[in-house]
Length: 164
Picture (cartoon, rainbow, N blue to C red):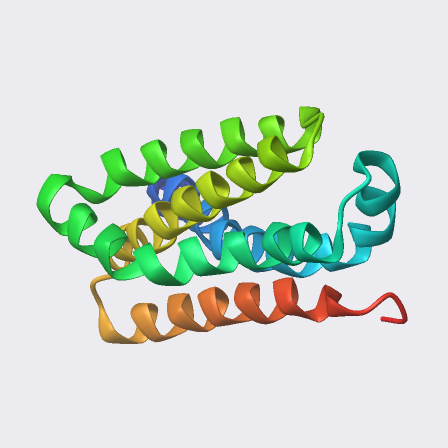
């Protein structure tokens, strides 16, 4: 067996793990990005749906309240029911709620969809972290994976301003 074959044999098991890491690291970045980007869309939402200031506040804050309020429950559900199941459930809830937000025709629909979207984010985020930690049991690998996780959160929060 040559050097190239040895490298290929080692690279094959690593590829699915790396792909899984990319998907799992994108989850928190997307969640944080969503919380930030909605602020940029508030003028357009106000005009399109004729939202009051209070309704606009609920569009922004409803997501964050649901996300923060249900984050610990999402982690506990991932512990009890399994990280993969809860991650996929959280992604499904998040995507369906995102579609509902895009199709919202009034304030009530938009606010409700944003709250459900926050709940989906609260389920998928801790489940993604749990799955990622399971992929990298070795301390050195785990540190790097947590660095990627933190970088994803940081990248998602960079979009807080139009000037960036």
